[in-house]
Image (spheres, helix red, strand yellow):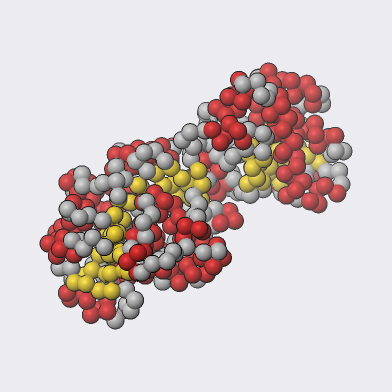
Length: 491
């Protein structure tokens, strides 16, 4: 967004002062829309301004609220340090006390406290005297409104950049401009941003022209629809299972692949586990797969279009051989690797070297650390760039699971799926939910989707299924919620 704003101003299409005026007006309108009761009278507001352009937005907000008849107190951390902010400070024209003059009684009487101290340009740790003022506002019961992003959150990573602690509670409202920032969805920023409103400040042309932007994950309802054809027209997915007593995770993945629309799904297991799996499966077919040689023979069938390995698979020599056969065979299908398969790949450089552009890796952070031990320590400082680096190294799609799921492709494409705020699905923190996600990805890939598109859509569908069921969810419920999700999406 900093680049977009600079490009718009350099073109002469808009000035910095015009953007600041639009931003401030957008914040005021967002406040009144979010709390309609505040529009009925003349409230009290405290506006906290920093020295930069975020503070300039704050001066505009203070002036506009005053023009509406509000009683406004403005506190400046330091004098305006940019030309545009200085101009807006002059147009405010009112007094500007320091932060040290903040009093509990005034905070308790304020309808809103506006945080316009540090925005997306934060480059250092925020002192306790700054974030402490925001904490005071929350403790006093005022509605804390963040302009662009809470001061003390890194707009690129969502990490807290504050000395000695930070806020315990999210903002009552965050108002950002033109597009959400990564820091609103990643890391601590995902939980501390609170309700998020994006205000259009007239930079849609520059935003549309931006190359390489990270976007929000989405799904095409039209593409999810099945077209005419027979079962093989919609793909055949193969799920590799573990030994006796360890088939549950693979069965979850298999059922998810079938529910998401794969034409056929086969579960491959050792001979001793066939009866156990047969007692739990009907529409999913079974096939004995003793080891790598048997799998290679199975994969001679070109109609098998996707394979998932890892859920409940095990970590022995047989399992390592299966992963090698899946990745390195002459007739290799697309491959989704999860759980134990990821651990096996992390343990064996020869397996890692077999990864190819039709693979999708679905690690959680612990598995990611085993796969990419040098990259994992940097996740907290920039998850998107780390995932892009991991995907490039592996030569395939990497999906890092979490409430802030990040999906990257080897060519640099990246999407973020944030199960936060109105789309939060805490019930997904249950055993087996990741196996279902792997199965959904595999089912979509079997239907002909690219690994990247399948991972993107699967992250969305996974959360929608959890939200469809609600509290009390267990992993077995997730595939059964997909039909309801499809109906709601118009599939």
